[in-house]
Length: 282
Ligand SMILES: [Zn+2]
Figure 1 (cartoon, rainbow, N blue to C red):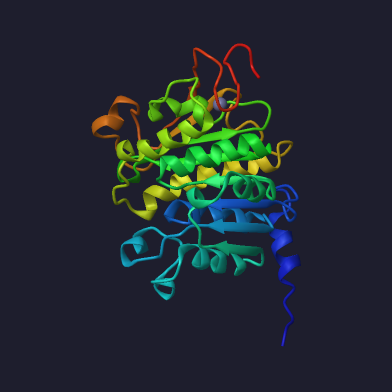
Figure 2 (figure 1 turned 135 degrees about the vertical axis):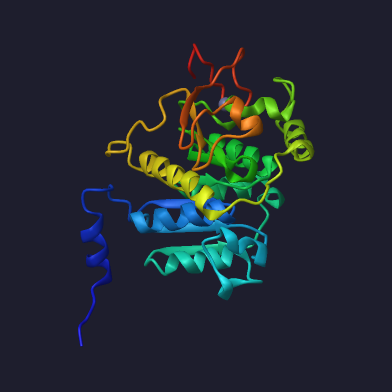
């Protein structure tokens, strides 16, 4: 019989490839296909604590790309992903909750209890609401979403007190005037649901490319002095295309498979959410 020291074995493999992340806390807003993959990669990289937020349940259609499997069908995604993460010797707490039902104070308390929020839902209202909470609570935020058939996606990182935030980058999608009050803005986020990008079926192989990039950027945010520092230049966000030829509307942006484009955030006026301005900073 051989006693296995899991902690030591894991650490020996991670030495030199990541910082000391055992004390890091990550909130996963959304435990769908992308969120589950990113969470798993972060747990494997040594992030020690997770809170998983999602109200959906895992169904058969999810199996083509979700990190959880047959054993978890019918289970809440938050519970299933939290369980998946604990199998990598980390702590993970599940919350079967819709972020949009939380009061601002409760959401800010939850966001304030972690180092980084990784938001991967396909609900613009949830993404923008999480972004506002990151700004108020002064926490790192990472907002990732897939495009059509998961052929590509975008990744936007928010660093407290420096910007830009999610609203700076893609707030134009909400179609909201820059000077509206926070409460009205939240209604506009809800209305944006009608215009949201429809999540079309895609395979895990497509989504894994976006998940890997999202997880790498999460690690760079948690360990800014580490080897992954500066993956997204200041004032920019990332557009990615995975392992297929760009087609239809994506062919207007991308020209090759596996293409990563750095897009500069542009705004004419200070951001109503975080106050960032391309020239003046914050
Ligand atoms: Zn902003």
